[in-house]
Image: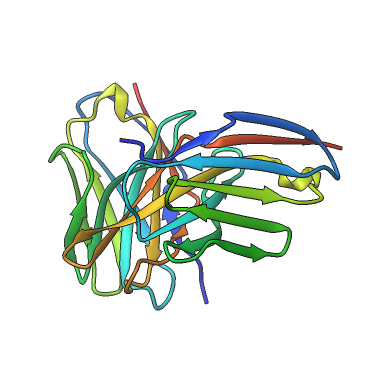
Length: 114
Length: 114
């Protein structure tokens, strides 16, 4: 089952513009992570934000987390053609026996036009 | 430090057959997770292994089984293949830790069931 739900499903912007993707989820979490996937290949981890954090930055990426609204956003500033990919949010929750289960949304497909 | 590797890259099987997919974890990681990603969907958690034992499982039937070896390599076995098993299978390794951690994904195995 999908826990996170990204919005929008698809986003097309010009190079140099900012891209914002949103994620909503349903249950309490330990952390929320964002991943990028190029053309059906493996996923690349972008950033992890823990449930007691509100904002995190990494290079051109800015992630916010609002646990009261069960939502997160990923902002990519000054986008480049190489940012074209699918972006997934994933919530991680403790499922017992030392196991933390990662549950993905359906993703946002970002196209950056040169 | 080597990344996560998977083999084979592509595989074609017929309905009812059995398949084994292989994964080699990133050096130093003690946990491996497997995911199924259908076309246009986010990855779905199949199961996780830690210290050679399954310690978490998603909503997948028992015909999906796995093994983790002392050198942290892993196998995913699927028996009695069905057409709906056609998907990209991803493995991810991580270090088990308090609060959860990022996962490092391999490039995936594309399985087609005819």
